Image (cartoon, rainbow, N blue to C red):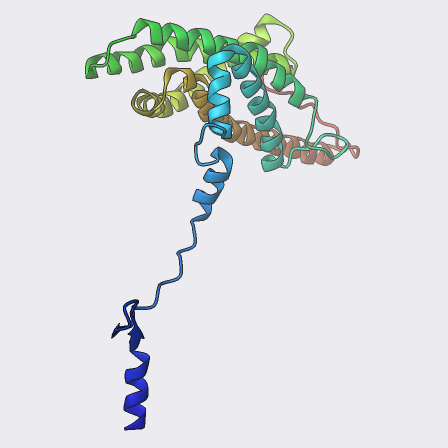
Length: 258
């Protein structure tokens, strides 16, 4: 009996008016926020008016070209460092920060960003106010068949110059060898990226968004290219050792002869 009375006493509470009633169920502990949500909230401060995202969008509206130049230059430099780290491509001092890093920053800030700013602005003006499905499809087609080849050609030309090309023949050889593979990647990713931008992003954020897409793809392509170059160097080194050159020097040159 005493045990039963004890259990009944636990289930009874005193109400504000002096009566009794059933005890409320215990509260569940608050669920732990997801890590991605915490990171996103920290970066954007809840997407509030004083958040980093809001500040960046204001800069894009107040000074679009300069903001895009800083963004593109930073991403291009980071892409080179990250690709070198992934491929384990160090300079003679064992560092991943090579002379290509500032060169890539200059390319991103003073070539890629202004070119993207102009090309995307022209594309948006051409299709301004046209929201039909047909217009969106035409915008994707024009982007992939007109704008993308121009941007990729400029990109490959700059990469050839950064790699050491000094003659027109060397630059042309690099562009001819790399344009089609780069265009294939563009044709696979650009329609999805452009469709996403059409549906969810304001016009002023298109260039930084496409810069980020290019950063991800470019990092992968850059790291893959570096790995292939290192493999070729190792093969040449081994061949040099077998040919009786104990110092391991090779006759290897990057594609295009530069």
